[in-house]
Image (cartoon, rainbow, N blue to C red; front, side):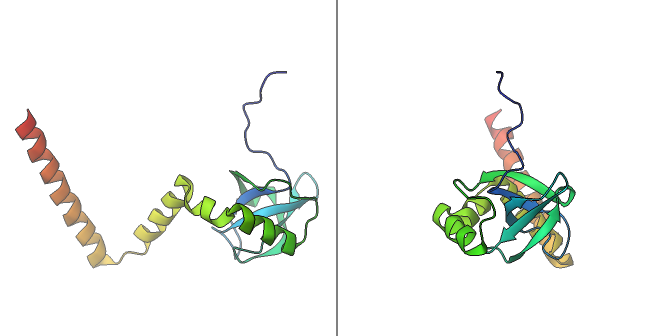
Length: 135
């Protein structure tokens, strides 16, 4: 049988990023699959309460908890997440870093945006002079 091109599946233990609701932007773990539209998610280490959540408001991440039993309670999920360093794994991923950078950009005030522009100009000038010297 040929290998599938899909790498992320809806499965118990899959880490998901929430796209909507009060916990939007946080990660959680699929604890149980209800049907083709919904799953029970839980994020005991990330502050997401255990709840039924539709797949259309989730994004599957490449991270998954191994050996998580079906219908595992919050305590079991918490222990497994801490054992596997789930939050650290997520925060060290390039996806989470990009989200954090975007969030930081959005929270800048007018003067901070101006400072970033000036710093970019200075960096651009240094690079241009170095290229001119090398050529």
